[in-house]
Length: 295
Image 1 (cartoon, one colour):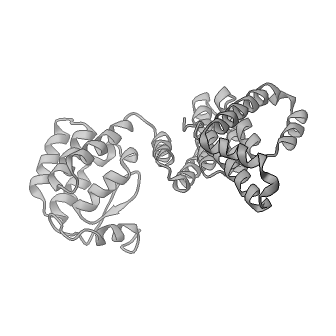
Image 2: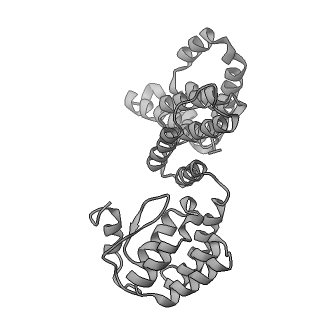
């Protein structure tokens, strides 16, 4: 990666730099992001905290800080942390506090995220970062991140361990949740189905059937379940939940307004009624998808 990519954009936002702005980047291990100054390193910590592991506590980084940035005092202090077998949190916190780019609350949050990834595999770290994107409502970025994890998992065969199947099932499940967050229920259903193929858990199956129901009309869903009897018990539960949500919605002010409008629909324009029905449907879908948390 060269100076024309996202780190140069990052650098353009930094008007003051502690130490020298290097002509030679340090490429962060595992995430392969090049940084050119200590502030860019801190921003990379913030934006990729879950992906960073103990590999960052290496001799090349210390030499880069000492030689290329001219920050001898910082390099010596970090070398002391490494020699004393300090933690990843200790190491990164020292850099963050020394640089002073972020306030104390932000530094605390970054360090908390760093510790969350301790002991995780690379794929687990990448999944966690995607989970964070999904939970914050950044569904498009989350979908891209989940697909990257799936691509790195490779194909499944008889030798695939149960732990790997479980991890991949959870990735597909959370991919489905991200699609549901964008109200793309057919794509959500396809993802939840993949999750069930990896590991047939009640959560995966429930989400699969719920997405099917939300992506189909009532009659089409009934026809589908009739040809897939194994879905019968769960489909009945899903319909019950949707009916409950509908009653709850109709009991609120907006729902009551809809009831009044239905009674007087003969005096209203058809387009007004259609828009109102669509609004209620979207309200139900929105509320239902909120009950499908990232797992």
